[in-house]
Amino acid sequence: MIHTFFEQLGATSALEWAAVILALGYVWLAARQNNWCWLCAFVSTAIYTYLFWQVTLPFQSVLNFFYMLMAVYGYYQWQQGTEEGNQVRSWPWLWHALLVPVLLLVGWGLSLVAEGQFNNEFLWLDACIQVLSVVTTFMVAHKILQNWVYWFFINLASAYLYGQSGLVLSACLFAGYIGFSVYGYVQWHAQYRHQQQAQDMHVYS
Image (tube, rainbow, N blue to C red):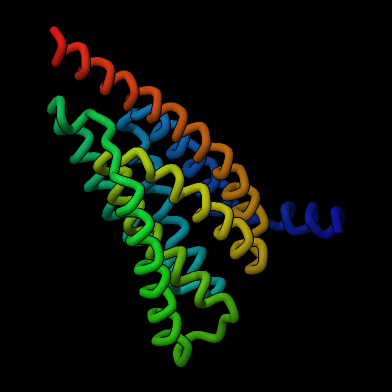
């Protein structure tokens, strides 16, 4: 099994290596709220748009094309430079409890629509990852703290999906993303707490 893994890793294309390195750069820079993350995201997702289409993961291909557009939008949002735009925000957990089941149902519906066009046993998982990722990317652009919780589970599911589709290096990347999700949450939560403390001091001053 280990021998097979290294054989698949050795067969990884230069394009996939480039996409993985840039994707790692995106997550690291995003966790540190560095605007350069969006350039890494744009180039990485352009490569993945092509790669996923080649292995019949249509929803992942469309999702990465969407990511390309969101990279431009995210850069614009973060460049605004207003005090409100630079702050980390938090949505009530009740919103998420209502939102996630709806998104999973939408993903299931999309997979049913696509069944006649694509022959892939993981269409439902592919579609659900797409729908959840679209919403979560908007959360990143607007600096919603809980985006990292969403990414934790999306990355877990993506690692499994890519591994089953033969994209071993990308599967390893998304497995590593699970740890980055925790790191990102810790970083953003620290800033969120600092903001809350600053607001409390302002109220009582």
